[in-house]
Image 1 (spheres, helix red, strand yellow):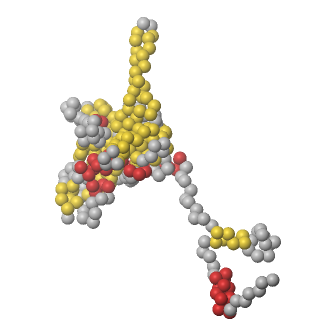
Image 2 (cartoon, helix red, strand yellow; image 1 turned 90 degrees about the vertical axis):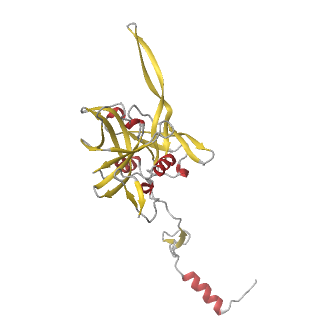
Length: 298
Protein backbone atom coordinates (compact mmCIF):
# COMPACT_ATOMS: atom_id res chain seq x y z
CA UNK A 1 0.00 0.00 0.00
CA UNK A 2 1.30 3.43 -0.90
CA UNK A 3 0.90 6.07 1.72
CA UNK A 4 1.26 9.85 1.40
CA UNK A 5 0.82 12.82 3.70
CA UNK A 6 -0.40 16.36 3.05
CA UNK A 7 0.79 19.42 4.89
CA UNK A 8 -1.80 21.46 6.80
CA UNK A 9 -1.72 24.46 4.37
CA UNK A 10 -2.47 22.22 1.38
CA UNK A 11 -5.23 20.44 3.27
CA UNK A 12 -6.91 23.70 4.25
CA UNK A 13 -6.72 24.91 0.63
CA UNK A 14 -8.47 21.79 -0.63
CA UNK A 15 -11.21 22.12 2.00
CA UNK A 16 -11.75 25.79 1.08
CA UNK A 17 -12.16 24.97 -2.62
CA UNK A 18 -14.61 22.20 -1.82
CA UNK A 19 -16.69 24.54 0.36
CA UNK A 20 -16.82 27.44 -2.12
CA UNK A 21 -20.25 27.78 -3.77
CA UNK A 22 -20.54 27.38 -7.54
CA UNK A 23 -22.93 29.99 -8.99
CA UNK A 24 -23.49 27.82 -12.09
CA UNK A 25 -24.34 24.61 -10.26
CA UNK A 26 -27.56 23.14 -8.86
CA UNK A 27 -28.04 20.45 -6.22
CA UNK A 28 -29.95 17.26 -6.86
CA UNK A 29 -31.26 15.82 -3.61
CA UNK A 30 -33.12 12.98 -5.24
CA UNK A 31 -30.55 10.53 -3.92
CA UNK A 32 -29.02 9.62 -7.27
CA UNK A 33 -25.55 8.19 -6.70
CA UNK A 34 -25.59 8.92 -2.99
CA UNK A 35 -28.51 7.05 -1.48
CA UNK A 36 -30.05 10.37 -0.49
CA UNK A 37 -27.35 10.97 2.11
CA UNK A 38 -25.55 13.74 0.16
CA UNK A 39 -26.55 16.12 -2.66
CA UNK A 40 -25.19 15.50 -6.13
CA UNK A 41 -23.86 18.64 -7.82
CA UNK A 42 -24.57 19.00 -11.56
CA UNK A 43 -23.24 21.73 -13.84
CA UNK A 44 -25.94 23.65 -15.76
CA UNK A 45 -25.64 25.01 -19.28
CA UNK A 46 -26.90 28.50 -20.16
CA UNK A 47 -30.47 28.15 -21.42
CA UNK A 48 -31.63 30.01 -24.52
CA UNK A 49 -34.81 32.07 -24.52
CA UNK A 50 -37.73 30.12 -25.98
CA UNK A 51 -38.48 30.88 -29.63
CA UNK A 52 -41.66 32.81 -30.22
CA UNK A 53 -44.55 30.93 -31.78
CA UNK A 54 -45.75 31.92 -35.24
CA UNK A 55 -48.74 33.68 -33.72
CA UNK A 56 -46.60 35.66 -31.27
CA UNK A 57 -44.15 36.68 -33.99
CA UNK A 58 -46.95 37.76 -36.32
CA UNK A 59 -48.38 39.99 -33.59
CA UNK A 60 -45.03 41.76 -33.44
CA UNK A 61 -44.75 42.10 -37.21
CA UNK A 62 -48.26 43.36 -38.09
CA UNK A 63 -48.03 46.88 -36.55
CA UNK A 64 -45.18 47.79 -38.95
CA UNK A 65 -47.34 47.37 -42.06
CA UNK A 66 -49.76 49.68 -43.87
CA UNK A 67 -51.50 49.91 -47.21
CA UNK A 68 -51.39 52.78 -49.68
CA UNK A 69 -53.79 54.13 -52.26
CA UNK A 70 -53.42 56.73 -55.00
CA UNK A 71 -56.85 58.34 -55.29
CA UNK A 72 -58.49 60.61 -57.83
CA UNK A 73 -62.04 61.92 -57.64
CA UNK A 74 -62.55 59.86 -54.50
CA UNK A 75 -61.67 56.59 -56.21
CA UNK A 76 -58.59 54.43 -55.80
CA UNK A 77 -56.62 54.43 -59.05
CA UNK A 78 -53.67 52.45 -57.70
CA UNK A 79 -53.10 50.43 -54.55
CA UNK A 80 -49.97 49.10 -52.87
CA UNK A 81 -48.46 48.00 -49.58
CA UNK A 82 -45.78 49.54 -47.38
CA UNK A 83 -43.69 49.15 -44.23
CA UNK A 84 -43.01 51.80 -41.59
CA UNK A 85 -39.24 52.24 -41.63
CA UNK A 86 -38.85 55.29 -39.37
CA UNK A 87 -40.70 57.61 -37.01
CA UNK A 88 -39.75 60.93 -35.45
CA UNK A 89 -41.12 64.00 -33.72
CA UNK A 90 -40.98 67.26 -35.65
CA UNK A 91 -42.33 70.78 -35.27
CA UNK A 92 -45.51 69.61 -36.99
CA UNK A 93 -45.94 66.62 -34.68
CA UNK A 94 -45.19 62.93 -35.00
CA UNK A 95 -44.24 61.77 -38.49
CA UNK A 96 -43.77 58.24 -39.80
CA UNK A 97 -41.91 57.21 -42.94
CA UNK A 98 -43.12 54.32 -45.08
CA UNK A 99 -40.98 52.41 -47.58
CA UNK A 100 -42.77 51.11 -50.68
CA UNK A 101 -42.21 50.74 -54.45
CA UNK A 102 -41.59 53.69 -56.76
CA UNK A 103 -43.87 52.27 -59.44
CA UNK A 104 -46.70 51.97 -56.90
CA UNK A 105 -46.80 55.70 -56.11
CA UNK A 106 -46.26 57.03 -59.63
CA UNK A 107 -48.89 59.74 -60.20
CA UNK A 108 -47.72 61.48 -63.37
CA UNK A 109 -50.62 60.09 -65.40
CA UNK A 110 -53.29 61.55 -63.09
CA UNK A 111 -54.66 65.12 -63.05
CA UNK A 112 -55.51 65.52 -59.36
CA UNK A 113 -54.01 62.59 -57.43
CA UNK A 114 -54.07 62.19 -53.67
CA UNK A 115 -51.84 59.73 -51.83
CA UNK A 116 -53.16 58.18 -48.63
CA UNK A 117 -51.78 55.66 -46.17
CA UNK A 118 -54.35 53.38 -44.57
CA UNK A 119 -53.96 51.70 -41.20
CA UNK A 120 -56.30 48.80 -40.46
CA UNK A 121 -57.28 47.97 -36.88
CA UNK A 122 -59.67 45.02 -36.89
CA UNK A 123 -62.97 46.46 -38.15
CA UNK A 124 -61.72 50.07 -38.36
CA UNK A 125 -59.53 51.79 -40.93
CA UNK A 126 -57.88 55.21 -40.66
CA UNK A 127 -56.62 57.24 -43.62
CA UNK A 128 -53.67 59.63 -43.45
CA UNK A 129 -52.66 62.10 -46.12
CA UNK A 130 -49.12 61.37 -47.34
CA UNK A 131 -46.45 62.62 -49.73
CA UNK A 132 -43.55 61.04 -51.58
CA UNK A 133 -40.25 62.50 -50.33
CA UNK A 134 -37.82 60.21 -52.19
CA UNK A 135 -38.17 57.99 -55.22
CA UNK A 136 -35.78 55.72 -57.07
CA UNK A 137 -35.59 54.90 -60.75
CA UNK A 138 -37.39 51.80 -62.02
CA UNK A 139 -36.25 49.07 -62.41
CA UNK A 140 -32.79 49.53 -60.85
CA UNK A 141 -34.06 51.11 -57.62
CA UNK A 142 -37.80 50.52 -57.44
CA UNK A 143 -38.18 52.05 -53.99
CA UNK A 144 -39.93 55.15 -52.66
CA UNK A 145 -40.15 56.81 -49.25
CA UNK A 146 -43.48 58.25 -48.13
CA UNK A 147 -43.86 60.80 -45.35
CA UNK A 148 -47.01 60.44 -43.23
CA UNK A 149 -47.72 63.30 -40.78
CA UNK A 150 -49.80 62.34 -37.75
CA UNK A 151 -49.01 58.63 -37.99
CA UNK A 152 -47.16 57.09 -35.04
CA UNK A 153 -46.24 53.45 -35.63
CA UNK A 154 -43.25 51.44 -34.44
CA UNK A 155 -40.69 51.13 -37.26
CA UNK A 156 -39.60 47.71 -38.49
CA UNK A 157 -36.04 46.64 -37.71
CA UNK A 158 -33.94 45.97 -40.80
CA UNK A 159 -32.09 42.66 -40.94
CA UNK A 160 -28.34 42.73 -41.48
CA UNK A 161 -26.77 41.30 -44.63
CA UNK A 162 -25.60 38.22 -42.73
CA UNK A 163 -29.16 37.48 -41.59
CA UNK A 164 -30.38 36.86 -45.14
CA UNK A 165 -30.08 33.14 -45.72
CA UNK A 166 -31.42 30.78 -48.38
CA UNK A 167 -34.20 28.60 -46.98
CA UNK A 168 -35.14 30.87 -44.05
CA UNK A 169 -38.81 30.82 -43.05
CA UNK A 170 -40.57 34.11 -43.85
CA UNK A 171 -43.90 35.89 -43.45
CA UNK A 172 -45.06 38.31 -46.15
CA UNK A 173 -47.41 41.09 -45.02
CA UNK A 174 -49.19 42.85 -47.87
CA UNK A 175 -52.55 44.17 -49.09
CA UNK A 176 -53.35 42.45 -52.39
CA UNK A 177 -56.15 43.97 -54.48
CA UNK A 178 -56.36 46.95 -52.10
CA UNK A 179 -58.01 44.85 -49.42
CA UNK A 180 -57.09 44.75 -45.73
CA UNK A 181 -53.70 43.45 -44.72
CA UNK A 182 -53.16 39.74 -45.29
CA UNK A 183 -50.34 37.31 -44.60
CA UNK A 184 -48.69 34.48 -46.50
CA UNK A 185 -45.84 32.19 -45.53
CA UNK A 186 -42.94 30.56 -47.29
CA UNK A 187 -39.18 30.67 -47.39
CA UNK A 188 -36.32 32.56 -49.02
CA UNK A 189 -36.12 30.69 -52.31
CA UNK A 190 -33.19 32.58 -53.86
CA UNK A 191 -30.57 35.16 -52.90
CA UNK A 192 -28.60 36.92 -55.63
CA UNK A 193 -25.36 38.38 -54.30
CA UNK A 194 -23.37 41.36 -55.50
CA UNK A 195 -19.93 39.88 -56.19
CA UNK A 196 -18.13 43.18 -55.64
CA UNK A 197 -19.96 44.52 -52.61
CA UNK A 198 -20.60 41.07 -51.09
CA UNK A 199 -24.16 42.13 -50.28
CA UNK A 200 -27.55 40.68 -51.27
CA UNK A 201 -28.70 42.33 -54.49
CA UNK A 202 -32.02 40.54 -54.95
CA UNK A 203 -34.13 38.13 -52.96
CA UNK A 204 -36.93 35.75 -53.95
CA UNK A 205 -39.58 33.97 -51.93
CA UNK A 206 -42.07 31.22 -52.71
CA UNK A 207 -44.70 32.82 -50.45
CA UNK A 208 -47.92 33.39 -52.45
CA UNK A 209 -48.80 37.04 -53.22
CA UNK A 210 -51.23 38.85 -55.51
CA UNK A 211 -51.76 42.14 -57.33
CA UNK A 212 -51.32 45.07 -54.94
CA UNK A 213 -48.72 43.30 -52.81
CA UNK A 214 -45.98 45.53 -54.25
CA UNK A 215 -44.20 47.29 -51.39
CA UNK A 216 -45.15 44.59 -48.89
CA UNK A 217 -42.68 43.46 -46.26
CA UNK A 218 -40.91 40.10 -46.17
CA UNK A 219 -40.09 39.34 -42.54
CA UNK A 220 -37.97 36.67 -40.89
CA UNK A 221 -40.22 34.33 -38.92
CA UNK A 222 -37.38 33.72 -36.47
CA UNK A 223 -36.27 37.28 -35.67
CA UNK A 224 -39.21 39.38 -36.86
CA UNK A 225 -36.80 41.64 -38.78
CA UNK A 226 -37.50 43.06 -42.24
CA UNK A 227 -35.59 41.04 -44.83
CA UNK A 228 -36.89 42.68 -48.02
CA UNK A 229 -39.56 44.74 -49.79
CA UNK A 230 -41.65 43.04 -52.50
CA UNK A 231 -41.00 44.57 -55.92
CA UNK A 232 -42.93 42.28 -58.25
CA UNK A 233 -43.51 38.76 -59.46
CA UNK A 234 -43.43 36.73 -62.64
CA UNK A 235 -46.62 35.25 -63.98
CA UNK A 236 -47.68 32.47 -66.30
CA UNK A 237 -50.55 33.15 -68.69
CA UNK A 238 -53.30 30.54 -68.56
CA UNK A 239 -55.79 30.39 -71.43
CA UNK A 240 -59.00 28.43 -71.97
CA UNK A 241 -62.07 28.44 -74.18
CA UNK A 242 -65.71 28.65 -73.09
CA UNK A 243 -68.56 28.62 -75.61
CA UNK A 244 -66.12 29.41 -78.43
CA UNK A 245 -64.82 32.42 -76.51
CA UNK A 246 -61.14 32.58 -75.49
CA UNK A 247 -60.22 33.72 -71.99
CA UNK A 248 -56.86 34.11 -70.26
CA UNK A 249 -55.45 35.29 -66.97
CA UNK A 250 -52.06 35.60 -65.30
CA UNK A 251 -51.06 33.33 -62.43
CA UNK A 252 -48.10 34.23 -60.14
CA UNK A 253 -45.34 31.67 -60.47
CA UNK A 254 -44.27 29.99 -57.20
CA UNK A 255 -40.80 31.04 -56.10
CA UNK A 256 -40.75 33.98 -58.54
CA UNK A 257 -41.72 36.80 -56.20
CA UNK A 258 -38.67 39.06 -56.20
CA UNK A 259 -37.84 41.72 -53.67
CA UNK A 260 -35.35 44.43 -52.69
CA UNK A 261 -33.28 43.11 -49.74
CA UNK A 262 -32.56 45.16 -46.61
CA UNK A 263 -29.13 46.14 -47.99
CA UNK A 264 -30.85 47.86 -50.93
CA UNK A 265 -33.24 49.66 -48.59
CA UNK A 266 -30.27 50.98 -46.60
CA UNK A 267 -28.53 52.12 -49.77
CA UNK A 268 -31.67 53.94 -50.93
CA UNK A 269 -32.14 55.78 -47.62
CA UNK A 270 -28.47 56.80 -47.49
CA UNK A 271 -28.49 58.07 -51.08
CA UNK A 272 -31.52 60.29 -50.42
CA UNK A 273 -30.35 61.84 -47.15
CA UNK A 274 -32.38 59.76 -44.70
CA UNK A 275 -29.51 58.10 -42.82
CA UNK A 276 -31.11 59.16 -39.53
CA UNK A 277 -33.90 56.64 -40.07
CA UNK A 278 -31.24 53.93 -39.84
CA UNK A 279 -29.76 55.32 -36.65
CA UNK A 280 -26.45 55.99 -38.43
CA UNK A 281 -26.35 59.80 -38.19
CA UNK A 282 -24.24 59.67 -35.02
CA UNK A 283 -24.47 62.18 -32.17
CA UNK A 284 -25.24 65.11 -34.49
CA UNK A 285 -28.87 65.49 -35.36
CA UNK A 286 -29.55 66.55 -38.99
CA UNK A 287 -31.77 69.49 -39.79
CA UNK A 288 -35.06 68.61 -41.42
CA UNK A 289 -36.23 70.36 -44.57
CA UNK A 290 -39.88 70.95 -45.55
CA UNK A 291 -40.09 67.51 -47.16
CA UNK A 292 -38.39 65.76 -44.24
CA UNK A 293 -35.03 65.28 -45.96
CA UNK A 294 -31.67 65.94 -44.30
CA UNK A 295 -30.26 69.39 -45.17
CA UNK A 296 -27.51 70.09 -42.62
CA UNK A 297 -26.02 69.01 -39.30
CA UNK A 298 -26.25 70.80 -35.99
